[in-house]
Amino acid sequence: MHFGLLSCSGVVGLLLLHVAGMEQPDQPTENIESAFCRNGQESPEPVPAQLTGTIPPWLQGTLVRNGPGLFSVGETSYKHWFDGMSLIHSFTFKDGEVFYRSKFLKSDTYKKNIAANRIVVTEFGTLAYPDPCKNIFSRAFTYLLNAIPNFTDNNLVNIIRYGEDYYASSEINYINQINPSNLDTVGRVNLRNHIAVNLATAHPHYDEEGNTYNMGTSVMGLTGPKYVIFKVPANATDSAGSKEPALNKLEQVCSIPMRSKLFPSYFHSFGMTENYIIFVEQAFKLDMIRLATAYYRGETWGKCLTYDKDDVTLFHLINRKTGKAVHTKFYGDAFVVFHHINAYEEDGHVVFDLITYEDSGLYDTFYMANLNQDFEKDDNISTPTPISQRFVIPVNADLKSAPKGTNLVKLEGTSATAVQQKDGSLYLTPDKLFEGVELPGINYQYNTKKYRYFYGSKVEWTPKITKVTKVDILTRAYLEWTEEECYPSEPVFVASPGAVEEDDGVILSSVVSLNPKKSAFMLVLDAKTFKEIARASINASVHLDLHGLFIHDQP
Image (tube, rainbow, N blue to C red; front, side, top):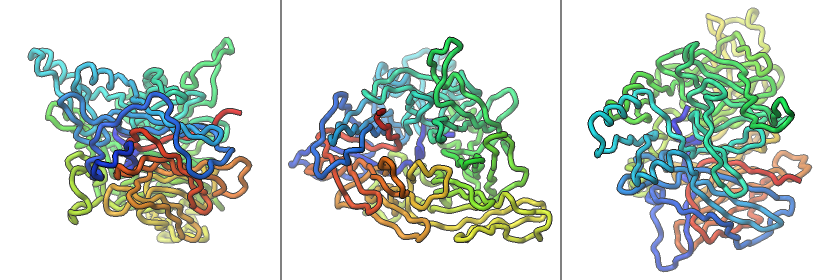
């Protein structure tokens, strides 16, 4: 669930990622905090980059990324960074050259706001009130409509693929199809026309056949509130054999009942192995009563999220093929999670890695009032620390013969435990892998498989990101890239053709400096050594973003 918020991504997705500008030597260096609040600019036509180094000849395709880019309309401004209207940008790699382009997502929300020259659609952290020029009856009707929120279609979190089509997505039932070649907005799609969900994640999974798995929340379904997992095929044809949108062939894999109908769990992503779906029903929840009355009380949707540190986390394990949940109940201590790293099966165990937090303070960090503060000068301002943790579930353990209080994890190389309780449930404790990395990514060819490396953005005590990091899970060693006055985006791994080793490929990250003498650039690293092999400088405005997708050119 995510109300077009993040994100994490898409939360954090979430953390600083990029800003930019053309070289203007006479201007002072910009403050990083104020850069979060600056309106971005479109570059609708391809801008050729100035190349230093050599782009691998096999790197052919387009990195399309999404994030908030417009923070004020007329005299009105958004109050939260995750509210800014989507500005999509792309980096196209073609025959050793790089071209940049950016366009605002022409969502219904964007069109309404621009036409009114004010913010008229409510977002995660910003209420849009009725036009003060309307009469009292029109204003009362607007309040009534917002008793059950009509979610924005400002899809600012990620770019996802359903079948052969690409969509800008957040965490609502609306998605907007885009043309990844020129970034034009094709049109809005309501997922509720295909499956009964009110919210859906912006972090789906893709299997080797090209099918897309995702999950959402059905708050107002006929069978009561539930979590829903669904599958979209790689391609679809109608009865006449003609191609049609793959969403028309969407099918439900399963549904999961909520443990609390009035407090559904927030989720930004989920895990998947070869045989299982992993859903973490966390103690970070949405208060449905507060949500239903939020607009009337002048409260934003973001204020309806609540974290119960005294609650427990419930881990759901669902068989991908049958849609049935594993009978055993799995619990753990309370924490907040936005991003899954990866998950796989090994020797009768399900292993899943998460980025966790001790509290829900990350969202509060991104209120504009907080971002305008100077994190470097004020020691009292900080952001929660992300912790990479590994959980292990022994799915084949003999629960009947094992004594209560026994750790049933037999997997070597991990300190994660699963201790059997008196009621037959297993209580999980994690193995800490690493600290201070968010926005994780992997070589996606290893998704659902045992893996060794993940890549991410290094986060210390502010939302600024100044480093990209490669973590070796086996040795717990890490490599970093950093450069003075530079702020890199979420790193994206692209595997080299025919790669044998897991880290054989490149890392892509758009980098921004707030020093006006430095232009933004696309950074290309050797994923194995983390050494720079090329950079493509962009003489255009480049904005902060959240998540994205690399789309390979078709042979």
